Length: 68
Image 1 (tube, rainbow, N blue to C red):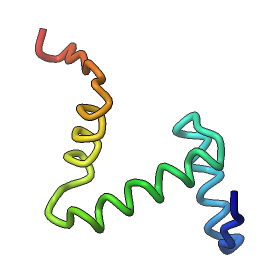
Image 2: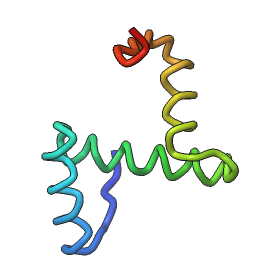
Image 3: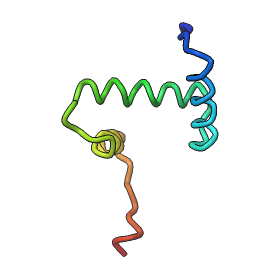
C-alpha cells in the first residue's frame, strides 16, 4: 500500500464528499480514482453510463421504484 500526496484543499474536499457519500475518506479517494481511470479509458461515456456498466459487471440488480 502506498501513500498518495494531495493538497490540504483537496483533502478537505475529499473529507466533505466522503461524509455525504457515507464512505471513508480512503474509500472516497479510491472511488474518485477508479471513476477517473474509467473515464480516461472510455472518454465517450458519461458518469452515469460508467456507473451503470460497473453495476452491471458486479451483477447488481437495480430496483427502479419509479417504473412501478
